[in-house]
Length: 380
Image (cartoon, rainbow, N blue to C red; front, side, top):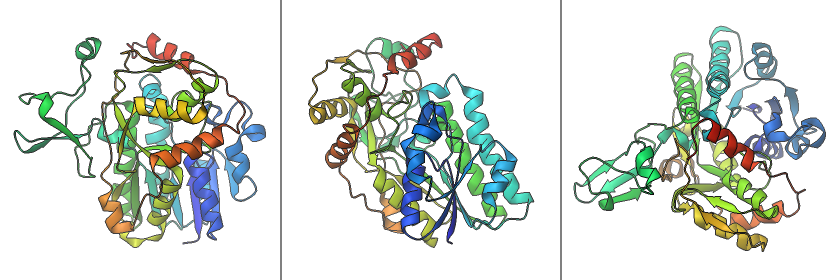
């Protein structure tokens, strides 16, 4: 397969994937709506992500919710990498229709065309997300069992109790362990639900119409090129913009909540393995570093790299729908695809900060995003 369509191909992951595929000799088409939330007010004039790919791919400005845009983009393609989506767990909780229409509706439209119209597509790859799992996986030595805690309660978190709970089990005996692909899927946000449905739709329909399918459950992807102006996604970007503007960093909960941060180059490499390897077909893969990093460590690392001292306030504030911990078991991708993360968090954070230091200072929109969530009753 040499002709690859990337929906959302002007985004952070998509643009990096497009450039690497072009470098490897693929012919790449990009379908992207150049969302202002990601690319700024004048995307075609000032978006570095768009300009990086503009003259190297066949670019179609369009939406995955428009059938004619899909038809135009699919013409002559052999593989679709479907990355286009509304992203952001917090924002998804009050822009529900927008997230469902784009993420689920756009995917359904793609599959409807592939099912009912003549096309040359052989494989569909879709971006899921670690958000489909909801809370992470835990092990109790007391019972010798694995557990998948449900959502934490407003009452507990308001009282400063942020740890997960399982009925009948002493919370202190619960040990966080990596989340495998066969772990319980129980998303705690609208965004997570839409990514779950995207993956299920792609695997179900492709298996019925003779096309191969692959889904990737990306963890917290970061690196040079990610949007510094979007206050709804990317904790490294949000914290970086706060620091560069000399503003205090508000750490939610107690700062011990953790995520799996995976560098963009590792994500691109994994995705290309999914395109090229038949062993990927029919599978869902975690793509992460396999290492949990807590939020306080992230903030301290960024301050150290930038050399700018700003206050860190561990506020005890929290967002409804947020999880406590989650990090990926990446053994399936290692075994079937030969995926091996090359970037440690320390090396990746240095590369990211070096890039940020070369960028124009962005307006800090963090407080606006918090105000929106407060108005909707989602931020306490």
